[in-house]
Image (cartoon, rainbow over all chains, first blue to last red; front, side, top):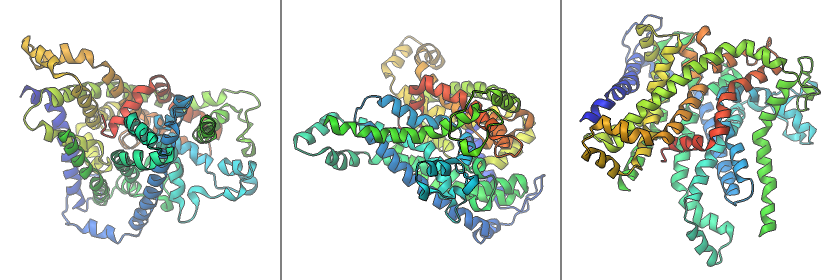
Length: 288
Length: 270
């Protein structure tokens, strides 16, 4: 029981600031509070229904999906490839690993500020950034509009996000690969299996739990993506996502009822990924 | 076998270049004199080194860098200390229902903060701590508690229970056991936890931009405000980006091992 006393301040703070505020936010989402001073005029689920037919929200969902798919697939594939490359016990492994993981120490804002410049879409005499580099090394066909590509700009935004998070995915996979006992691989080698077949049939199946963790972590990050887009593109409709819409609606336009509704939608999208994962992880832990 | 392994280096080096390319551009651009900003030479090395961009960037970002330090150090230390006590209780001094409470706490580290932002701002206004660094410290401490609790709980789970039992036999109570037995062996976990909090609070933008004003802006907000501006030149922006990331990058370079451990626990893997 004294344990409960020692942890009570933390638990109460979290109960209020996480669960209490989520409930409060939901209550706000049921109102048409639009000015600075709270005005709780109950309008039921009207905000939720309005958003379902809201043009900007439709764009946001599409953008969020494009970003999530490109970001996750690229991070998982690149992360796995880098992990396998680093697993070969080559010289300078530590150096390569440290460099691949370096972007994790940097903020999305810094990443955005730098990549905004690298992904400059200008062409001809104003060409710069990566496009300029492409023309210098003879890769002219690769010159493109990056995040300003019509319809697919979000895939351009995913590039710096992959730059930032691929090393993290690599670290997860590498830890997974290294935790597989060497004897298992050795046994497969004795049976005459090629290195490729060992990865394909021995190692990859064992990485499933790690891949699940990676998918959940990357997924919830991509559903919340906010500062990276702000730093690269500011607030442009073509690159809008629910988190930016929520921020503008609440703190630029003071439409708190609608802002709270957007927030609830974002929370819901994250919760359907995270809650099953938490339950699953806790069950696994109890078993072991 | 040996020869085919050598073929892996080109691949490793290709990715090395991919990850370092932005770093290269930031460094060379920030060292170029103000006159030398032609876009066509942005990939070339500077003809001469010039640190004027750094002093110009510091003029714009200096106060916010100091704000960031004033924010990050107390927040990281307080959050780690509270997390350590929580982790100790949840791993070694359990109360009935502790195993149910833990995942409920963990959920707090995954929520999109948008979903608590409006009540948070309203509450901070009511309490009169909106717009300043102390309020932002409180917010980061509270929302840092789940990950801090997780890191310490996993660390303490590996501490032999006999150690705790021995202290109990010697008549130590919960606090005595914590302070005399557990805390002294917690230094590695504190390093991991404080590095994690230091990095994530330093790099935070959402809380910072909503909860602070110009005089209390942390560096992420200040940097974002000069980004893409027509008035502040690229050389200065790149010097600013480097200044804004230097503290966390230095921590990463010096204490990378602990940084990695924090990252791993963020994926719920001890």
